[in-house]
Amino acid sequence: MASNDSSRSAEQTAAAIAAAKRAARARARQARNELDRAACKEASANAADNLLDLPELADVGVILAYAALPAEIDPLSAISRLRRRGVKIAYPRIEAPGVLGIHFVDHELDLIAGPFGLAQPSEHAPRAPLSAVDAVIVPGVAFDQGGTRLGYGGGYYDRLLPSLRYDTLRVGYAFDEQLLTVIPAEEHDELVDVIVTQTRVVRTPARRAF
Image (cartoon, rainbow, N blue to C red; front, top):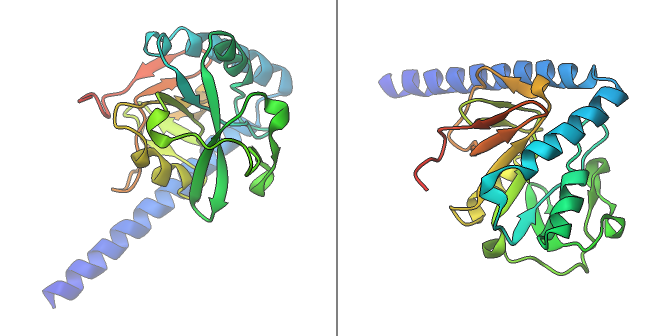
């Protein structure tokens, strides 16, 4: 009986967390989607400045970036300036459900259409060794100040991030409107070290050990 009660309690807890995540995801997406195009463009430019000012990125050699969806904050201007610094840029490619590979890309015009409306590298693009990545710009639906990230629900980054070096800097990239007070987290949810928005840089306590 005790075992059944424990199992039932765990199921109820998991269901409550899933419901809270759905509510947080909907709230953050609505706030993000209500931004007009001009506001998004200005916010992306300001966030790029904040990203490039991070001292942690001063000496990096390889950064894993992402191609923004229409409603997402766009890191492209920061990526272009990082290239001019001599930084090599890699992008993720969906290789199977829940699985990302990463490939070097010399120019964003080399990206092709992928699943979910994402732009991604061709399968023929040079593969980037996971061990080579010094920093990753992580997209998300929402983040909180403790470093918890709320993704789209596919678990792609929760699987990718642990496969990178432990000292790879994880930078959550988002609009101010996506920064929530608390996001419910589960054991498999991966954390970020820094969150960059158009007005803020939040260094989280998530993985200070490295």
